[in-house]
Length: 49
Image 1: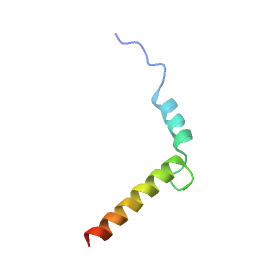
Image 2: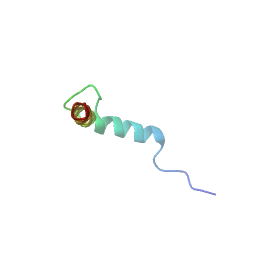
Image 3: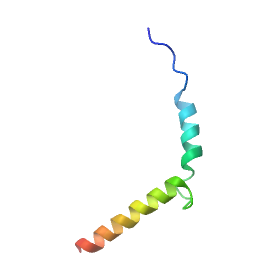
Image 4: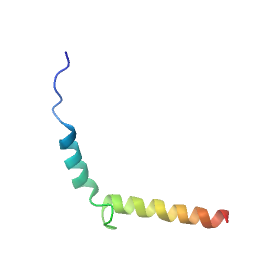
C-alpha cells in the first residue's frame, strides 16, 4: 500500500498560482513567458510571409 502524499494537488495549485502570478499581468512570470512566446510567434509569422 502506498503512503499518502504529503503534498496534495490543491497545495501545488496554490503554490503555482502564487509563483506564476496572473497570465494577464505582464510583470508576472507567466505574463512575461506568454509575452515572449507571442512575440517570437509574431516574428516567425512575419519572417515566413
